[in-house]
Image (cartoon, rainbow, N blue to C red; front, side, top):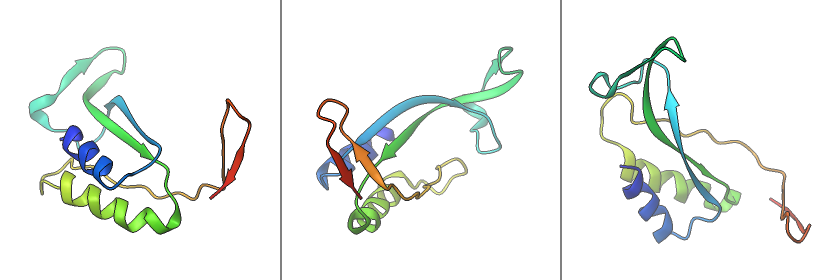
Length: 99
């Protein structure tokens, strides 16, 4: 599923996309993919977390693309969190960009 979403985001030229493999705890877990973890003292499932930084103008297009390609209708489809980004700093050049 994550590859489908990532491919769709690439098609709309979504900038600054990061995909991170994670283990999640919570009621959204699919029971068919549970693993027992003594380290976490509970059950968890592996997921992919996407982090995307885009301009305000691209937020709706980005959300629409994610919903169209990630929604299965089942519990655990995920959530989209929208947070403001004030500035981005390029580490190599030190260039600062307002968002």
